[in-house]
Image (cartoon, rainbow, N blue to C red):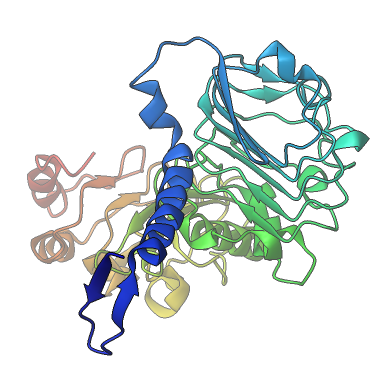
Length: 391
């Protein structure tokens, strides 16, 4: 009898050859199973696009469609893997009619864009559905209503722009994976912020990996939706219209938590006699044109204006900007529009000082004001008017 000596630290000693062969056979079978369960890509490089199905125990793997013989006779199949589905549509009632014992369905890669019908009641044993790496973006509203045992939905790397809450929030479902989809970050997405147990938002298992599509392309979805939701709530405290214009990362490794938001608030033509005492967070552009505003002192006294860099005050009743002299706001504004007001004089010495210290200033609009053109005002004003930042 042959013997093989294993030299482990524990000194297991000598093992008979037939025991070793048994261990080797078990290991070989284990390796073959894993080789059989290789990913769809490995087969794609070795074959054409003809339909082919391979069965191993209760697992059936099909490439480029489903062979006709499996339209029935799949009673023992518990896991069905469809690699490179060739059609843009998938009809669960038609494809799955021969698999009454199915527990897991996988559709990986391919041309799929639409589930055209709900999963049938006969598929109620399904516990897990993975549709990944396709162009899937549409499912019926009651797509999963009959799947009373469904626990996990993996829809990563598809083309969903948004989700219908009623479609996906079924009682049995525990986890949903959505990363890699071009999700829209908008007010209607605020359902994902709901952390109550049983809510759809609570079931999203990969929130930290979700990203927005345009106009906030690549930004982390959760904080952007939080910003949009907060902006919407705070905007109701004003008479204005509010819009999140842009979101940028604030650098560093923790971009998920470090974002800079730029919101535009439009309070034009609202009959305002004074500047608003409250502005939503992250307001950087403020439109106040067409009102009856006279006093600009809130720019120097109210901290809500600290972040406003573009300010439009055209068509108001402003007679002077002297009160802004020496203010921190004048040191950081980017655009300041005062066209069509009642300005007659301009502290040119003050503006000259501001433009020397404010590297952000791009444009100052002063047209259509009733300027007093005398020998004291005109020379200094002409000098500043030659500056391209004055218009």
